Image (tube, rainbow, N blue to C red; front, side, top):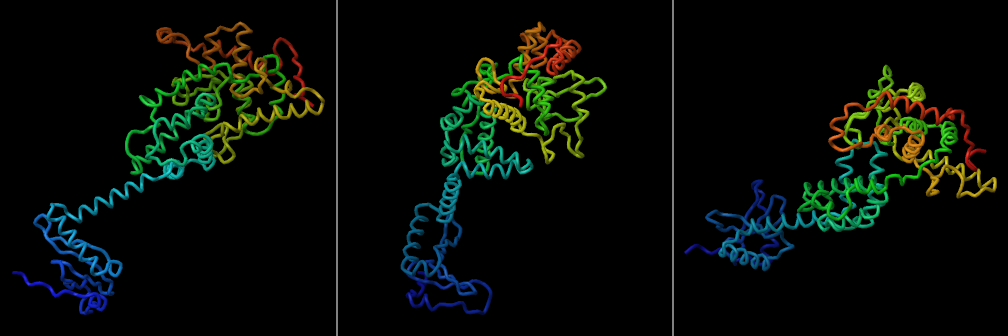
Length: 442
């Protein structure tokens, strides 16, 4: 029969100390429960251990520190641990599993707003500060009110759809960017251990079933961007040419080339061929995923040659610090033009709601993208072929079969059309002089 250890009392435990003869931990049999040990470190910190056999191997099971756990409680814990061993449970592994589950549960308590900050820091660190702030601003405006205070683990597809609902149709470009941001944040959260399961921001087989397709939204909005009336375009151009700054220059180039804002803002000098007066936009930057050639009118070429080239900066229309110009910079030009026109109208006693550069149908102030609609209306009135105008706008023309057989993008015919468009903007169209709309000039 094994020798039973002398049972220590509370005072014995309190007085016990390390002998100081070595640098290893010192063990004292506590008694009362076989294998219960008081462990003392060289600096006299004390804790409880249970030495027992688990699965044929001797294990030392930690029971906690002294004096937080007293002698009586240590004996109770030791008995409970030995009971688990008899039932085939390893107390050490069980504790690891509990700690892991607690850590996982804590990780999954991460709020979406906090996850967004961590994602921006981890994935967007190389972007300009202005770009990071723009992403955060979009999330704060549209996503945070709905899901910002939800844990990433709790977010479901219905929550994402609710966050996207209004912006998805009202501002489709922003809506698609927002979905991409949320998708990225939740993907990061999953890999980082903050959530489990499928990504509720995924489009295919997920949000696709709850929201209209982006192409459908765009189709429903086509022609709805407020556009400058054809008759007002020469006067609008005079006003625009008075504006200074990179945003105004980019807007002028976009108007001359009837290009999208993103195509102009992302334009780099290597895309320009001054020998042939062509701007060749690679398919990676085009909405329809196809290379697009733009014939440059003399006015467009002259504008490009007047621009400064920043060393080490590829962009033709760079932001002040050398990065890509923001969409807001271009939109702000037209907003200021409209605001100035309204101020002049108000001072002159004219109706403000009729002043400035407004869509003739909706009466709303025109926006940069609406200039493409203005061009389309102008081309139709001048009798240019529909397909030629649509190709100039980088729209898809004809069926799949028709596109497969079409080998030409009508570049030289389009060059003549773009020259005529430039002449019209500059007021040189058949000598027609178009007066400014009310309040557009001082």
